[in-house]
Image (cartoon, rainbow, N blue to C red):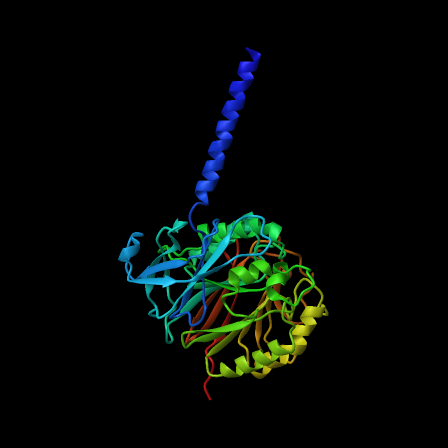
Amino acid sequence: MFASYHRARLCAFLTLALAATVLVSCAQAGPFNVYLTYPGDPSTTITVNFQTNKQDRETEVYVDTVPRDGRKDAYARRVEGESTTIPGLPVQRTIHYAMVDGLTPDTTYYFIAGNDSAGFSKEQSFRTIPAGGSPIRFVAGGDMDATRLTRRLLKVAARQNPQFAIVGGDIAYANGDVKNYRNWDRWFANWDRYMRTSEGHRIPIVAAIGNHETNKVESEVYAQRAPFYYAYFGRQADVTYFDRTFGSLFALIVLDSGHIAPHDGEQRAWLAETLARHADVPYRFAVYHVPLYPSHRGFEGEQSANGRTHWGPLFDEHRLTTAFENHDHTLKRTKLLKNNEVSSEGTLYLGDGSWGVKPRDVDADRRWYEESAAGKGHVWVVDVSAQGVTYRALGVRGKVLDSAETPAPSRP
Ligand SMILES: [Fe+2]
């Protein structure tokens, strides 16, 4: 009697465990971690990224300007992509990506992604960036992880209906360690769940690298030092710095603050050439992880000092409009700065990466370069138009915690 009771309990437990296993594997059966990045001009190109837990290699994306309800033969275009894996990952995982080009600016597209072996995603949508001078809204922040604060701020960010999002490094806090793949899965699950506009469009990601994307492996090889960032965001460029132009309004320069590429050398030469190339756009923005003008850490920190030495003079010479800084887990807005001094001709530095991780304290007294600083979680919402740029830092309740403006540039 006693034995049969325990056998029944054991059977019930095994049945529940089996059901849970089936549920988990069902949840991961098709493509997952679907997200969008920009391989080039964000008005005419997009990269559809997704992952599968099979040994499949094929990557297919079906695209159209009208909904097709997932019937793949009905879509106007079929795009073949490529796939890769991360060596040493403790689970089966294929990382797929397909670049879709020839898109029409300011247009909604519907797509499904997958392959015959793994199946296809549900139909999803995105909208291309307008060409020309139409206003553009984006959100920017960094130092995210997957905390309760991250989720709250993701909801706030998505409610602004941004056309894309900048994540300025320290994204999933996996430290380039393949054992920490679940950190990225949690991060993508949050992005998938929350980062859609009110019309349901996915919000594309522009991702910069931070220190928590890298490990301590002694190697010059980018893929070994930052295996997840390389596999998940490496289609943005072959190196960890690149630029994009948004309509005729602004250039966005994404930099590596010394995590894979040093501030000087090739990256510095590329930055000089790139800033010069964008001399004629109304606004030039940069995003990178470690601040030139920190609000929590010391001013003389090595990476901050390297940024001021190697990049600062170029920002000054080419009149960088605004730099989006991160890493210090605070809310910060500087005065306009040029040549390491306050100057009405200078660059605005906004930061400092507090999109989910625990905010840090700032000094009791403002530093000479700060206009405002506070230990508050936030995301920056940026509206760019021919008439100027407005910046608003929104907190967890969507309240404006700080704001600033850049007037339209006066033309000579
Ligand atoms: Fe950091």
